[in-house]
Amino acid sequence: MTSTKMSSHTSPAGSDTPPLPTSIASQQHDHTHCITSAMTSAQDICARNGARLTKLREQVLRLIWQSHKPLGAYPLMDMLAAESTRRVAPPTVYRALEFLLEQGLIHRINTLNAYVGCTHPNGDHANNFLICEHCGVAIEFSATALQDRINESAADFGFSIRSQSIELVGSCEHCEATDHE
Amino acid sequence: MTSTKMSSHTSPAGSDTPPLPTSIASQQHDHTHCITSAMTSAQDICARNGARLTKLREQVLRLIWQSHKPLGAYPLMDMLAAESTRRVAPPTVYRALEFLLEQGLIHRINTLNAYVGCTHPNGDHANNFLICEHCGVAIEFSATALQDRINESAADFGFSIRSQSIELVGSCEHCEATDHE
DNA sequence: AAAGTTTATGTTATTATATAACATATTTAT
DNA sequence: ATAAATATGTTATATAATAACATAAACTTT
Image (tube, rainbow over all chains, first blue to last red; front, side, top):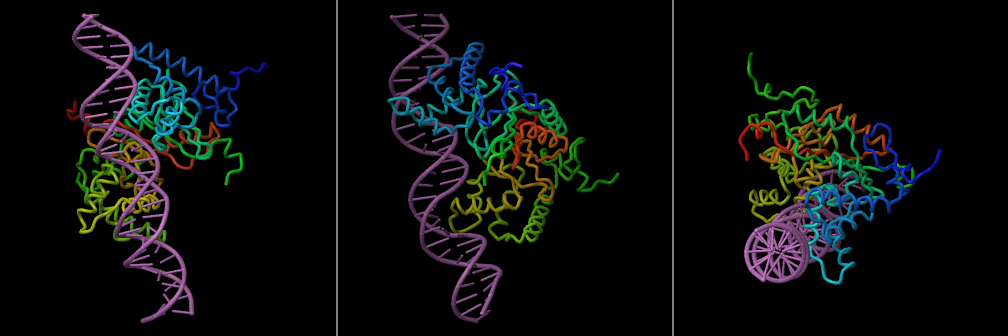
């Protein structure tokens, strides 16, 4: 059995999320790969949508992808300012975020008022997250059986879903194992 | 077949939510009953918890229960000010909200930054909502099958859930039927 | 009932998050 | 080259929430 980089990107049993590493939480994955893959994917998607991934937007996306921890708009603004000579104002950040949200390249985590890269911007884009209170990492996941129950619940009430937000806050495997008071 | 007040409080098939009227969305339910029942229930719960449901806290809860539409802290503040002679500052509101959240009497809707009365403060308190973009009503629901899939997804990742937020945004049955552009 | 303790509320200031409105620059289309 | 559309810059402001400290009300102990 040969070990490759991709071999660390396995899914837990029962989950539909295919390329999404459990090990994101344990910081043991090839994150450089995450970034380059996200940037390439972003270019493809924007090209396909006839949307312009400008220098600024690309820079914002790259900064968000520095980690799997949702990043607030103001910290992001500071990072942009640090990489630039001129000052950066809120609308600059929020417009880039708006664009990236529209293109499905990032998600907004409502419980944190923060933004994180979408790990499967091509597929379902289901917007389901496991958010660790200890390390700050947000793990995106999808599961057909879960989505079926969601759709069922909505149908029971005659409700039409336009967008959904499922955010489970707690402790990831790594942090649960580690000692945290 | 005799028609009673409670008869309107039926649940859709497949849902576990027992006393929760579909008709909340269509504004055809006995809302006075919602309020009085919520206030009585609140008193019981606080008494049981040894928590003090003060005049202010009760007033805030009553104001939140004026409708099934999540209410922002600042609108709530204005309503409090309108009912009083003195001015009301944010901490007054937020402390009352914090108390009511702790007692499980209200929920915070993250996608709206707003607060709504909990329609089953005794039971699961699952924090699942259908939020209508058109009329603003938030319908709380619970479903065992859904919760099972949620727990399953978390377990797949070795994740321990401390709190969860499921918010489905779209159109309620009534608004979907009605003409809205 | 008086004194001490805890809990709740009042008050002022500030932090955090996000958007409105308008100006300038850049890119795309004609 | 010009016009139109799109993106970014800039200033001001709206909206949401909390920190820090002062006062008041409620319970507790004697």
